[in-house]
Length: 301
Image 1 (cartoon, rainbow, N blue to C red):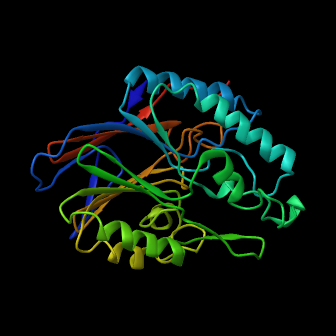
Image 2 (image 1 turned 30 degrees about the vertical axis):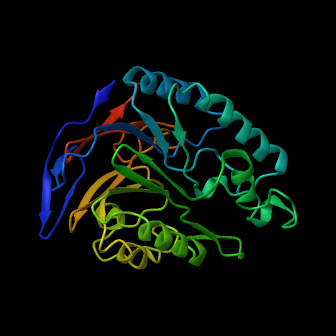
């Protein structure tokens, strides 16, 4: 196992970006300790020795023994354009494999969990498990909250079917109303952590493509600002993100936006953009937040 160590940090005041572990401290009256794993973009499938790789990641998580696990979406590969039989088998494979984790697991919906919305699936929209229903029937609600100690976690559904053979990153109006209700019942000093598959904030294009290249609607949540504005009077400390198979740590106005790499690396073919197959180990302790990206030691043969 390797853990990435601190490296060069680029400061863009009042925003700073770091692609390796860092620590921040906020003003809070001794919140409880919390140690958890964020493992995103597993892309589980029977091919490419993905099951063997995921099981190796699970072994490492169990050894680290965090309080719980949050998955960041894209749990399977995939349901978007597959037959019902293939999608069904992948969900069953994920459930049976993930059951080997020895601690509670809180799942996040990714775009690859949505059944049949691509034309090549030839799926009937009237099917009882069409779209997000397959995820909800197998893994539970696509957005929800839970608490651990003094911390409030909100798991979001950031994927919206366009009904035009594609999806976009979006938090829909029903969910926006739910967030408002959740926040109305939450003390403004409570530390809040969000999990979203599609990122709210990223510099992916600026780092890997072109400085002036805009983000498209499948790369980021298009109404992220509207969502974040809802938290203006609350204590949003962390937004955990997936989708990009890279690691980012961006801090804006006291909120950290951490993109969590990928358990599958480059879709089980090796590292992606220099990032090994891995997951985040996150520690919240007495008002401080620190993390490590854990390379769990799986190699492509």
